[in-house]
Amino acid sequence: MPYTAAIDLAGLDQRVGYMLRQAQLAVFDDFIASQRGAVTRPGQFAILMVIAGSPGLSQTQVCKTLGIKRANLVAAIDDLESLGWVRRDASASDRRSNRLQLTTAGQRALKNALDDQSVHEARITRLLGAASRRALLKQLAKLCELRKTRSSV
Image (tube, rainbow, N blue to C red; front, side, top):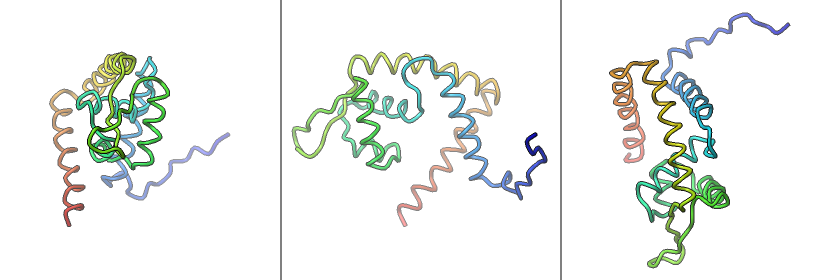
C-alpha cells in the first residue's frame, strides 16, 4: 500500500512561482486532454498560432515572441515541418535566415486545434467564471512585466 500521509509543502502553496507552476501543469494537462487532432502539445499550438498570425517571421522572431530557446525552437520547427504543417522559406534579404509559413495542412491542423482549444478555454471559464478569468489574464500580464524589467537592467 502506498504511503498516503499528507506531505508538508512548508508553505510552497503560498509561493507565487510554485502555484503558477502547478496551475500551468493542470492547464497543460487539460489542454492536451482536449486535443483530439494531431496537435498534441501547447508549444506546438503556440508556434502555429504565432506563425499564422504573422506569416513570414524568422525563427529568431518566433523565439523572442514565445520565449523559446533557439535550439528548442529549431527542433520544434523540424517536427512541424516533418508533419507538413510548416515550411521554411529562405529570406530574400538574409541567406542565413528562414521565413516561416503555415502550409495548407498546417492551417487545417491549427483550425482543428483551435476548435478543441475553445472547449478547453470554456472549461477554464466555467471553473473561474468569466470575470475572474479576465482578471487572471490581467494579473498574469502584469507578472510578465517582470521579464521586461529584468532584461532592461
